[in-house]
Length: 69
Image (cartoon, rainbow, N blue to C red; front, side, top):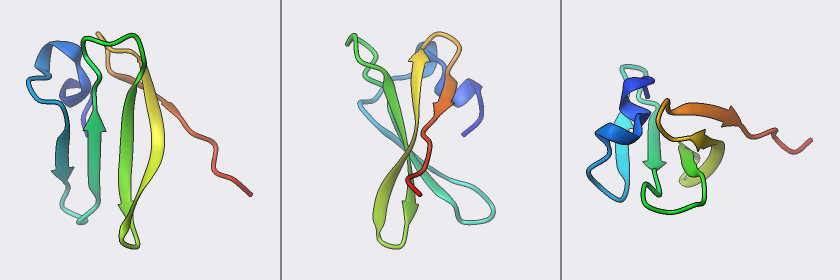
């Protein structure tokens, strides 16, 4: 998802699913009116994997999740 896609001002729904040209499917759960961070998930092998949090909802900046070893 582009940075503009993640901006707080552009969130009208409780979640958003987007697919790019490489067929990577991502889902954003913005939690706009809540104190908890937004969540970015990616579809991998039939399941949703949390790949990042959005703490600064105005800018949509993603803080990546470190993958388990």
